Amino acid sequence: MGVHMQSSQVFDQSQATRQLELDDALCGRYAEVYEAVFGPLPRSEEGGRLFSPEVIQRLCSARRLVEVGVEASLRSALAASATSQERGGYSPLAGAAATSTEQTSHVT
Image 1 (cartoon, rainbow, N blue to C red):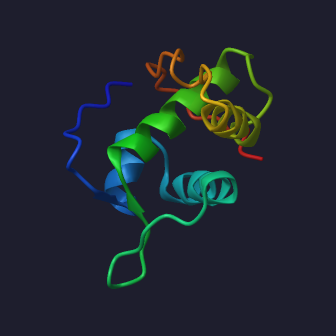
Image 2: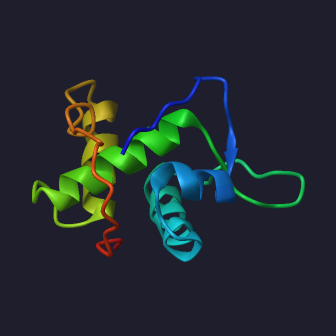
């Protein structure tokens, strides 16, 4: 997966769906898991979720960790990242290559 974006960009869910190469429903489930770990995503005036490049990258990297078997689920990959960041340590997401184009159903 080639995620190319400028740091100032913000994506709505349909744009994030394309960036993550997911269908809309799976992108919504990924967002729910992300929010459970990191807190609510910002919302548009219409109430839709907004995704920063950092959120997109975290989701790509977490999915990759699941695909290669480093983490059992998207939630555990994101939680490991959040915990290590709180401690100021290495984040497993930082080393994950987010190059996969496969969709994964390991959301919880």
